Image 1 (spheres, helix red, strand yellow):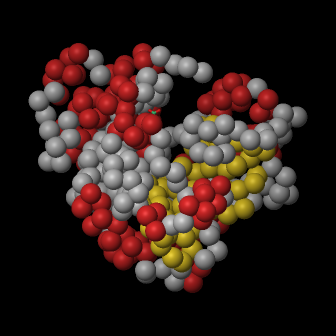
Image 2: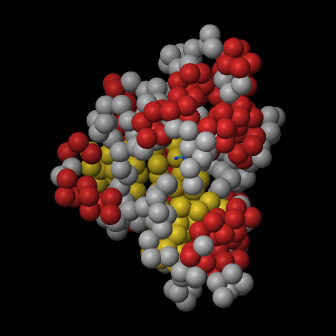
Length: 339
Ligand code: ARG
């Protein structure tokens, strides 16, 4: 559905008043409010339409970011991010023990390094410093988490395409990220780490400096969560992530703040999927986002959809997973909607 300018959160909150108030400001990385809104300006069909160049952007441009964050996450000034990685709080571990509906389960978190500019503002040399720090940290992994790091610039086109197809690898950022400046110097400084069993991945210098991903076939979201938690504990021994009590983990896009967590399943919904608008409404009522199987802004294939928690800030990590758990339960275990 084509949307017009007036529907993005950016166009709602980037009023003349806000513009006048923030126009003279520049963060230490040289990021301005015009840089923050460029993606939404150039892409009128944006839902959100703003990106942060660094941690400071969120405080310097608070009159723009705060209301957007409040509307997207339902999270207000003064609230504090909640953390809970205790996997015993996940309400159901295996969402599809019969293996009928769920093709795969995946949880990712986004992270950026403390004191580094985010993808829209980072310089080429700083991006490479970040890559080197991250690659050194990835060497700590042992046993099932052990794997290899591949720089995008060294990857053959054949392997790259196969990995994109298998949902392991990211593509060059879309037009939203392009306008935000996040694709500069592509593919320099970018790469992917994958464990030998390919159940654990780290994307380096995509939309955020790290996208830490745990995934596996089937519906066992509990196992996926535990693997992710183990990996995060190891990474945090040598990396310091950009974090604040209010915003939680910082991300370049305000939709990812807080837990920066997207817990998702690829699920077969052949009947429901015939009416995508209706399915979208059902998902929204369950606080879930609906995507196609090839990532954001992609289409569904053979009635298979990507369903995930929408809210990432103002909920803890286990609550984010439980939103997915409850939603999927509604969709399949209760069979209310499938039949
Ligand atoms: N900027 C895009 C929009 O406003 C994407 C927002 C959320 N997605 C993301 N990958 N950060 O529609």
